[in-house]
Length: 295
Length: 283
Image 1 (cartoon, each protein chain N blue to C red):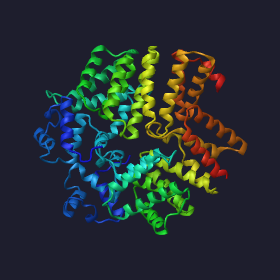
Image 2: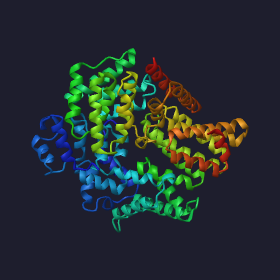
Image 3: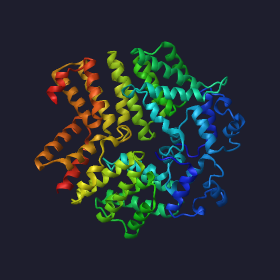
Image 4: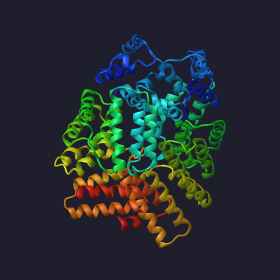
């Protein structure tokens, strides 16, 4: 694991790039920069920004090197059902509880802990539905936001699997609204498509085809805004094929569904692809024989 | 993206919407946080990160608001990577323009290298002809990469973008340095390393280099594929076909099967991209 304080990283990068303190000092004096490199003082957070051009340093390097705190984003990804791990969930929950200041109000920590506790319960008892009280708490929290944080995006999208599709779509479409997709970075738009695809699948399970159609129409518009990408395109084509097969079943629509699913073995890891095929069979959307015949 | 980013105001709004009290966000010193939010003082990086933890803010969120949290070179390198299936896209122009705007007053050795590499990319895009970088630039890139004992994203991106514009011997020397580096840093920079391996593999395949398979194939690890953030299994699949096919006929069968899958998904640009590589590789 690469791990060192920021000052050490800056110092050795500066040496490796053959630069003087003067060339990287930005708004600080060379004496201040020197004390910073030696670890005697901490500077404001934006010190990293002034090192972007001379050293080529990016905030993501700080994340990779565990200098800043975003690395726990990985733990959060484990809340998603296909990666679900009760151990990871418990780790996050413990971290959140540690951050809480007794007697002080913190809506984020409160709602995040409530959701993770509920996810632990759902997985433990094998339920498909979140408790009404937690859904209401999330809804109330959402109503106050003018933008989603990354963690909140994960939290809401994880929950969409266990709430009625109408509710899930309300959450995701609020995120799309807030994101200003016309100028959003493609990485963000991709996330929104994935979130929406989860809800569309839930709509298919509920056989709410009107909602499913509406969601797909919105997601295709988002897809047109970003560079071609196999992951999101697979999601959309699969849902489109599923929609056709569930609403106007024929040999052609069914063959198409199997064909699209089959491309997943190049796009996803073998393990995820297998579990996706199993889920399709479990929903009754296709049979094991369909896949055997094609493979 | 906001031009000037008032970080204090951002934190204040974020906190208030989530009903987080000053004390809950900064128990050691609520008043320091308050002054910071009102733009009256700055706070240290360490204290800011503690506040971010309690409020559920990540750097990713700040990047949505301000370019300040994204280095100009990584920004353009990431965008060019995402656009690789269709380099003629207008977004490529926009990305390079944005880089130039952001670094208009920048000086220094890395900046010169970045500009030279981006110019080479844009020239090839416009004329369809690949021109080698000036010899001094090549040497300087090599010097930077070899001097760096601990590569950061910048180093991986620089070599990836420059690869096609370097003579084979220089490219291979730099790539071997990257392999050594990757052994040191493990999987931490896996995404960026994989992008580099892909690009070097494609460049050397097109040049029909005798060493391409022994040099690149062992570096292609399926485990490094980040299947969400821009990577996809198709490029890996393509390279595996190229490296592992026993006969030309077998390679062709597998390539046409892959092309069929891309068509199934309506991935027209990707299909064209791989076709043009097949043409370059087999002539």
